[in-house]
Image 1 (cartoon, rainbow, N blue to C red):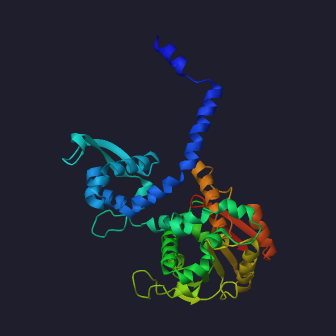
Image 2 (image 1 turned 90 degrees about the horizontal axis):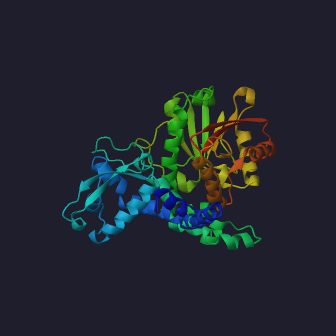
Length: 391
């Protein structure tokens, strides 16, 4: 039989091809939860840091020796790395002759860091070229088994229930903001994730001058700003560093503010004022209010109440008053498949709180109900946008 005849015989017809593809996709979607668990495991084992310390390239033998993985799990570690490499989280390069511990003297794959895993390297001041920003705290929050993954176990039951209880409350018995007050580990995980996420987001925002003047146009003319729900002040510190003339304050709940490192440490800018308070009750007077990942935690009615407090705190538009929101605007930004999928996945993630990621029409309705007259959307940072809202 000729090669072409053999190929023709093996080629499925269109109907069979569709069934084959469907069969594979069902497996793919059903198993996708393993991806985040495996990545979380790799970070917990310190694999990105181990690769970095080996000069950016490491074999399984190197990883076993540098991560504390038990030698008996060597073959399992290879399978973990094979999976994560297939998703582009690690790279796989040249083969090296295996060490004595390797199976039967076979060659070993050399694993390298990719852009994704390079931001999961813990900061190592003794190692030259260490990552300047370790984003692993964000991953640990997003994939946290007890407060993220497990909250979706009751999703079907929640959809069948007509009550107002959120997925988070159904799973854990309390709203997330009550849990941050009563569970020190969750409060720490939330704060640490917010710090690293904000640090990266603000770095990109404040250095991006490609769209309409970038940060200069957004913060132009402002002499004061209150970062509402600003946690440990990463955004406020970045803003005051870029705009030293601006007086920045952070308003957040007491359980957050009391955990802020004292002024004078490496982590706190002495010019930022921290205020314990409730954004639903009052916001200090200021030229602008900054809201990063705040409104997507709440339903429309609560968002309107927050924005009404913002409106009371700022001057009229002709005097420079505005609210600056950093959030997802569904449908805005890059048309990249990963960006679009991340927007809707993050919407589902926030749904468990009772919050929502909104499209432009939904944002417009909220702004109008809160008494604002106009807004401007600037896509930035992949799946996020900056929304300037004017009274």
